[in-house]
Amino acid sequence: MKTFLTVGFFFIVFQPISYSQDQHLADSLRHELAKTKSTRQEMSGYVPAFYDTLAANLLFQLSKVYLSNVPDSAMYYAEQSLLLAESVGYKKGMARAYNIMGAIENRRGNYLEAMNLYKQNLRLRKEMDDKKGIASCYNNIGVIYDDMGKYPEALQNYLASLKILEEIGDKEGAADCYNNIGVIYDFYGNVPMALKNYAISLKLREELDDKDGIAGSYINLGVIYKGQGHYQEAMKHYLLALKAYQELGDSSGIATCYNNIGNINYRMGDIPEALKSYSTALKIKSQLEDKKGIAEAENNLGVTYIQIRDFAKASFHLNKALAISKEISHLDLIKNSYLGLAELDSARGDFGNSLSNFKQYIQIRDSLVNNENTRKIALQQMQFDFDKKQEADKLKFNQEKEISAIKLQKQKAYTRGGMAGITVALVLLFFVYRNYKKHRIAHKELKETQAQLVKSEKMAAFGVMASRVSHEIQNPLNFVNNFSDLSQEMVKDVIEASNADEKRQYSELLIANLRKINEHGKRASTIISQLQEHSMKGTSHEFFEKEQA
Image 1 (tube, rainbow, N blue to C red):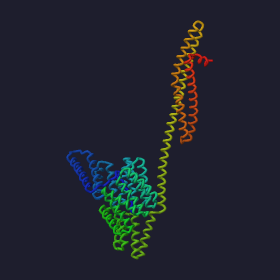
Image 2: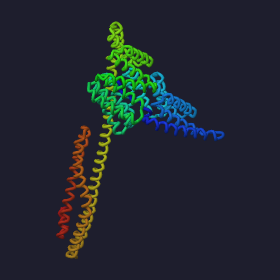
Image 3: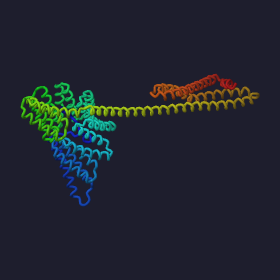
Image 4: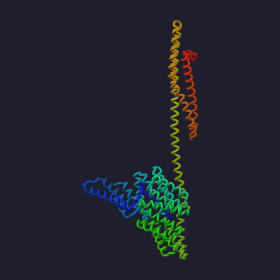
């Protein structure tokens, strides 16, 4: 089974292009590098560090160009980039170089060296507080543990990476992590969880139009279909991936596709096509010095030759696969090699050696898939899901708290506004009453000598006064009434709130306040109506006399 693990390069996904374009880009970068070197030589005395930084970046880009097709050249340029970056203390450049060197060593099967390089990258990323880079390091370290057969440790690093990526909203990196988590669950036979993670990864990659990532998702979905016996569907996905990698010029991806296509041919009984596909994969992986890929192709060729009873070739390829697998300490591949050798010995009638090899297979298989590892993986997933839910609940609680605070402020503001309106109304009524009282005293003093004139003037005065008061007081009273209606609507919002304590605390207080405001507002409206009525009849004084009595 060949699944596709995603290695991140600071989550700037490197998509190799065709050879001619690669060569053109490489020539262009070397030209720029030569110009930088020439400029430095022309300078006398002090040369700004900027030129070394620029050169380090150009060397890094050259390393990326050769990564998928010429690993030796890629390593050479990465090492030169690291030396220049170190000479000027350019941490970002150093981190980049360590990362790409780790990727090269990983492909060569030098896992301990790759792990050391990735950890150097991680140290620098932490010093720079580069969250995106830190997440990339965790993902790459997870890939190393995955290749070494340490699946709980691999999942732990994938989840650590995913947590950071989701916090910073990095969809591209998250897609890689979901893909790699799916690979872990696929290995343990948890198809629902594997498909769930693959589906999330594919969706994110499609949103980003990440052709390289989409091709990787096709491979892993093909592996699932193959495991379920749906060979035609698996072949369909492998061919889609192959087409994508051919368009991208990604030799490693192309070889992976041929290896998986060979698996389908083998299971469908087309042995010649299986041998052809495995041989193509082996040739490409050998050119890339990809020891893991070489061991896998060698093992597949050995098992296939058993089917046509070419035991000599089967033995050659299986023993070569075992030797390389042991060299790189890849337990899963070692396990597969022992199983192939057990099958070979059984076909040759050497049942003693067959049993011995099969026991080796069982021992390694059980060390990889055991109850303790399964428990660790389940606990890590549960902890990750719990932490994720806790973060979501905390965010929801803070949002609800903020909304409640805003509603409370609005309620207080509306209450203050209502009370202010009533206060204005009362002040105006006080002045009305005071003016009325003055006029009444004046009327009493003059009634004996100017009864008819004062009466006439009083009636006119009260008419003007009532009209003026009604117009002036109507606006604040309308505000009181409008506020009470609006506040009653707010009561519904408070009642519907999810926090029961706050709902009870504020709803009762708010309803009581609103009823009072509404009652006084309506009372003010009644006074105004009566004033307007008396004003129209010219009997305003009767209203005040009645109130006074």
